[in-house]
View 1 (tube, rainbow, N blue to C red):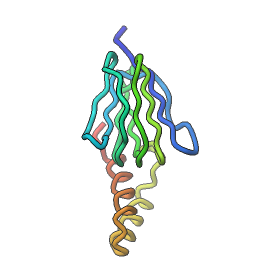
View 2: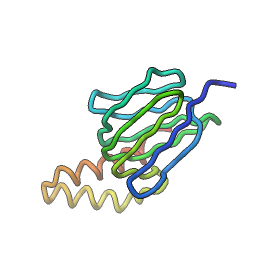
View 3: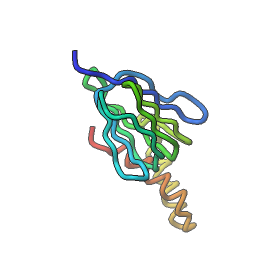
Length: 125
């Protein structure tokens, strides 16, 4: 059996995903980070961006994450996000409309959120 790490992806309002994985890639304020079993303990600040989870069964879970924290120790990874949604929960047309509204209003924060949602949906799996 390959080495695994236990992953908890939690948003402020719900548990988004939980399970075993072989790799998690997330964006932090220090840049993108990949965490595999046996990684050194870490604590970091999440930036808005897609999070990719390679599950132990060979699948891939992608989520749009907007801010929060990442913590890893003893092969347990916690992603504590302000906002997080799985790519298959994202309504693409709604995200595209939100992006256009944000651009028209020059709302950089809303534009970033909509862009992250769309990138999570279109990330190659």
